[in-house]
Length: 84
Image (spheres, rainbow, N blue to C red):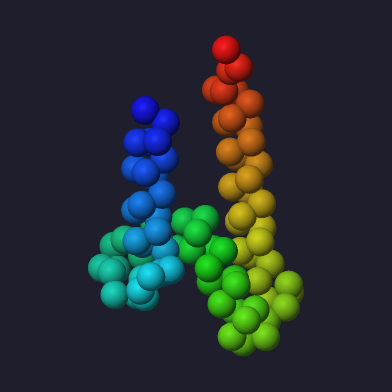
């Protein structure tokens, strides 16, 4: 069950995030969803640092978004995960 759930979340995120091919070719109605995926935030930030020489001041919105995801998923895991 766990592996299937992980695959159901990670495979679409990998395909939509622009890791393998540009996400700009997807329809406009899915672009807002693609822009807020955690992997898209990370990939775009790393591309900006490596390719454009951007600094933390240039990518702080993405870093803040990734931090928000980390806090959200930490809270959810504390709420729903139980050691048995």
